[in-house]
Length: 411
Image: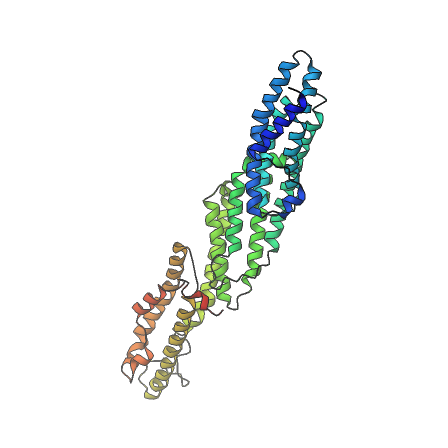
């Protein structure tokens, strides 16, 4: 069978597999889902071609021209040249196509494959006649590495500059946070490939490089979240939003391989940041209402303390106490209405935040009721002023951060 015929048969075998000649323009026009499927197929076709079809052709050429190396190589080059060109041209088209973050993983898959096939490409495509094909494969491997590296850089920049105005009205975990964390988790599935990739361009410590890149992505995400948190008109919601998002990041890191890379110190520092935001939320939301429950400012102008026997003092003081209870009721109802629409998606964090509020609010309220409740209870319409029992407050606190009717919430 002539070389031309064998070449045509090989090309037909590839066509039957589903290999098609696609250029950069064809690739650019494709929907991402279609392209992703074609890349998956290409990886499969490349493996079959290099490990089976080309290896089979090599055997045939070696048998026909046994003992004449130059003819063996020339025969093999003639038979496989077009098929190799078609396969590699698709890889080139992908490597040269417009970069986007979701392409990183398929680029890494393609790069990993080319590295895997490299020894067989060198064994099968020996000598001067096959030199061009050998070099084309090496060039494609380098180009895939280059594009993957640039895509990686683009991702880091995109995280930092993400300007989506998607406001999460209830202060929950932002879509950007979950997207970036999932992306980083995927990256760790490609750890060994990434290390090979880094070695293409740099002889340095690949582990240190991976750590540096991951740290930078996390910093970029946090700085973006800081910007997004400023969209809230309520400063307490700003703190809740940052607490939720950084908690999500820390929890995800602790459950993934990123923990080994970023280290315990990173985790501890960021856990403290979560706690700081929780404390800030508590201070901003609750310090004003706690002022209602202090003795401060409850003495009459003539110097008599609240609860003294002087009728004028007790009269004046009763009015003050009534005012305090009224203010407390209004403020607590407002907080309850607004903050039961806010969300803390992590149940453990939600519970601990409610508990932290209860630990300061309930003792202060009980003490105030114990001290000044009788003064109101002995007067007219006590229920108008003492609207809540400590148990009511506890029950209502359990409704905070449930994200109820968040779509109707006004920031």
